[in-house]
Amino acid sequence: MKKVLLLGLLPLFISSNTKTLEFDYEKIEQPILELNRKDVPPIIEDERLVSALILVESRGNDSAIGDRHLVGNEAVGALQIRPIMVKEVNRILKIQKIDKQLTLKDRFERDKSIEMFYIWKNYHHKDSDYETIARNWNGGPKGYKLDRTVKYWNKVEKQLNNE
View 1 (cartoon, one colour):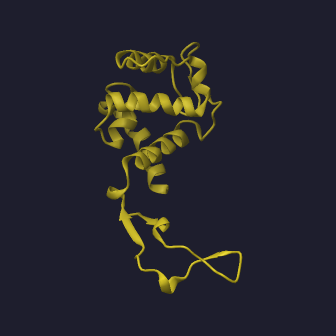
View 2: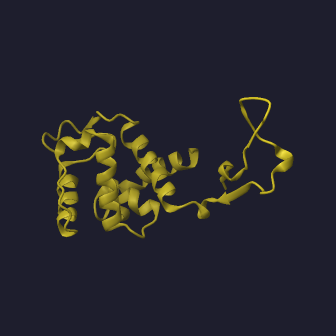
């Protein structure tokens, strides 16, 4: 099990005879806390999932274009988003009465691609586990039931375990 080391909790002391910052380890009263993954805030965990998906989908290439043979239905950008996903995200925004619409061109911008992912995830998978989220991202609304998404999940899980 991986642990996260929180160094921000260490007191920092400024040495009076130098202009550099030093740690006075003898004066440290607070212990260094080690947290298990279950203690890490969800937003950090979600960022780990997004990073893993980006690596699996495009190897981090914001200009990636997949399935070129499906003219008009190519998956593009860091998260390999298809036009149907942009349509779904805009539908969700409309339901939530958010006055914003994303475009097909937005798929090439990493920040906007990630925003689309979070809009979709928070609407459809607020309480889902990573496997369900990843398999549905790859295979559609019932992707978690499809045998063909297991291999995809294994790749995502491998990336998650490599961090």
